Image (tube, rainbow, N blue to C red; front, side):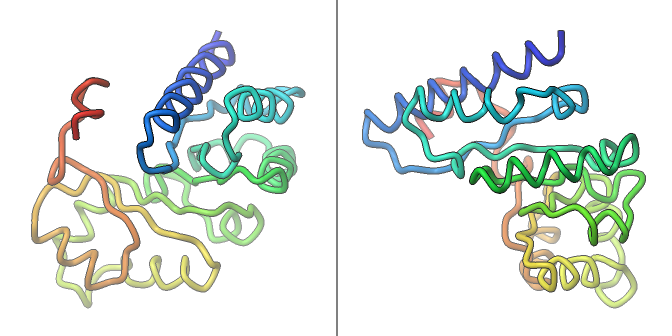
Length: 188
C-alpha cells in the first residue's frame, strides 16, 4: 500500500508543479517522501522518469526525501538505488538526520545532495552555547561533502540567527509558517 501511496503523492505533486509552470509561477523544487519499501521497488526509476516526462518537469525539481533509518536495513541496495536516481538527475535528501542512527559511515558511502537536520536535533543544539554543540561540525562536514543543509523545526528567531551564523543553507519550521492547505500555499 505504501508504494502505491508514494506514487500517488508523487503524481499529485508533478501535476501541481506542471500547473504552476503553466500559470507562470517561479520554477522551484518540491520535496516528497520516499518510503523504505518504495526504494526497493525494481521499477522505481522508471516510475519517477515517467512522471517527470509526463508532466514536462526536469527531474531535479522533484526532490526525494529518504530517512536516515532506511540506510540501516540494506545499505548496499539503498546505495545502489540512490546512485541510479541521482544519475538520472533527481535530487536526493537525507531526511531526519540526527534523529537516531546517524552514521559517519553512511555519510561517506551514500551519495545524496541535501542533509536535512532533524527538528529535535536542531532544538537541542541551538539551546546550547555555540561552542558547546556539534552543529557547527555537522554543517562544516556537510560543506566538505558538498551537501546543502536544511534545518527542520526552526521555531524562534534565536534558532534562525544561530543557524545563519553557522552557515546553514535553508531552514523550515513554524517560525515562517505552520503547515497550510494547498490554496493558502498558492496565495503565499
